[in-house]
Length: 403
Image (cartoon, rainbow, N blue to C red):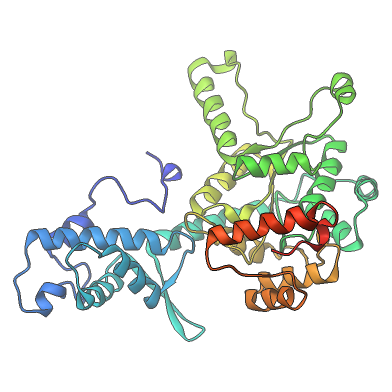
């Protein structure tokens, strides 16, 4: 199995040599505290069963601590080990001992002190991110193709009624180079801007594929008119447009074409969706894990295509370890959209900024001052109150509804 197919957030199915050493109690690193555990702390002999429970605990905690981020602090690891040690006969002293034992192992490396706390990562994730950034720099140095004429960009910006900031972002994404990125918080018009990018490339003779991590994201791209939306008459006259697909669907089509060409050669009826004239636009790229990002960049590089990433740097992946998009955006010095367009009122824009910067209490306070926020002792009471208010005034004045 290749490294591309591995999921970094899941434990390996087979025991590695490091795992065997852990169960047997052998030291993982010179000078490490491999013999320190809860049983030794109390002076009791360590049994094989206790070693097995410790191994299961540390494997589960190590998987969870890097599920959403690629780095962690000592406090994060203690919390994850405490959660994983429940019902396994490991007390508080054992939790602290396992924490120090794992941090001193060969699998972990220190990243230094950030904001007053030492941060750590696994060597596997560190090597994975270095490989991704190396691939990104190689693609960024290739500036011989994928150029869009200026008049195409101007026409697309006029069609989508873009602001000057959005138009400048389109020019940056349409410039020479095989990888570009666009950053911005939710509501700043990233998807709308990508629609103009798609039109500029398609009118310049390129084939554009829109991808997202989830099926709902692909449907949203089509609903907002960024990809694939057309009338029946247009479809009948000019053919159906390329519909947005999920990332897993793209990988499946690539694997199917590769296997078909391996078996049938030129007689294969399945062709790779990527070529030297293909532009791949990935929306919600912050939700891609480092493993998925590495595989996507590698496939685009191998096919000679171009990759455009769009996402929110302040958000991390909901599942698996994230941070790949944030690192790529900083490496490429990505243009960032800051003006909120989705919310029309000034209050709505202020609320989005507060939530984005982690100030949810201030956002709730703003709503409470205007009488648009209320609480209930139970979930059932909240639902009952919501239905009562909607039945009373929601149909007549939807904008005045309070939740």
